[in-house]
Image 1 (cartoon, rainbow, N blue to C red):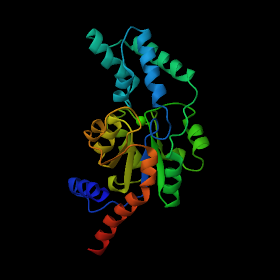
Image 2 (image 1 turned 90 degrees about the vertical axis):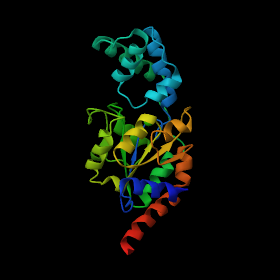
Image 3 (image 1 turned 45 degrees about the vertical axis):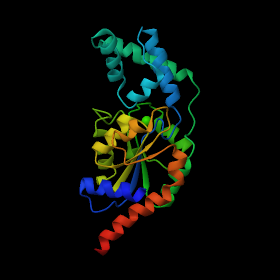
Image 4 (image 1 turned 30 degrees about the horizontal axis):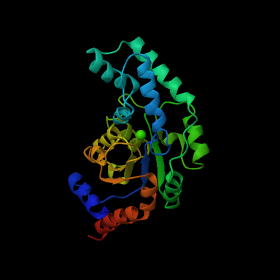
Length: 251
Ligand code: CA
């Protein structure tokens, strides 16, 4: 199953093999179980301004900038974009709603996966649209000795944000990586689209309420139902990828 997915990826990009050096992790819905809170905060905040954004739809927009999400709903319901002031007020309310909830915990399986990756001599990076100032602190307290500040891409680094490939292209640059030297782990359709557009082997973990097809249709190379499932299959994925690199050397 993994062999076929890897083969398809290599053929599509004309890469001779995958020489895995790093794993690029999205944060919300991948490392932290924070998406239910984000979705609910979006729904509640929009409602206060007379807009309707169902929780499930919030998962479809995951990864977009706040302004972009607000404008999509505003166009749909009023036929015009929101003003700069409206965007700021709504996004502020969304952040306040989100901060009312207790801090989301680690996604089950995430820590174990990160430790396995480190033990294999690879490094992990975080690539997130989030711009929380306490981000690194929170990552370090939940996943000690894994992440390095110079190997992170956050809202402060990028102009476009997902679904543009920019965040993942920037991660490749910061990590001094070629696209076939990394894999992307994403839970959101737009995040998968960004990883795929960056030319990186992209693994979807379906930790939310969306159908698998939504993630697969964005081009995910593999899909797991959870981070724990990804973690449990890590060795097979790594070995299968290493085999593609070996074949190359012996040819
Ligand atoms: Ca996410």
